[in-house]
Amino acid sequence: MKQQIFLYSILAFFSLMLTSCSSLHLDEASIRDKYKNKLIFFSNESNYMNEIEYYDALLELDDEYPSDISDLKTLTASDNNHVFESFHIKKTPAIYITSEKGVIGQISGSSVSKRDIKKTITKALESKN
Image (cartoon, rainbow, N blue to C red; front, side):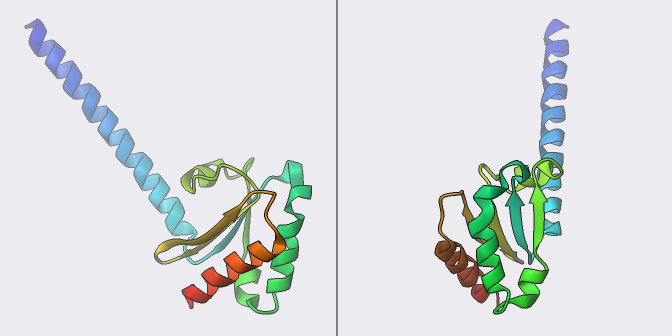
């Protein structure tokens, strides 16, 4: 009798774990789906001085890719922590370029040059078209 109760307890525990894991996966998938075909800028509003190279690069790319740059989504961790987690953002600033296939380009960190940022975005946007 004790073995049956123990066995049922183990089965109940594992079924609860499996259902909660699948809902987390669905949430992450739905968040990523919401940001398909986007240029996403992950910002840290408390340290915006580290983002100057990113802003400069985006301003310069606006002439070449006006529709992509104008559709830029800027997200801050304080308001969008679940999105940061879904994209596994470890450091800001960061830019992710997505397509129907998922993330096709990304760059992050405050020690990257404007040239590298532009190069990464350009390569990803050209592969999208």
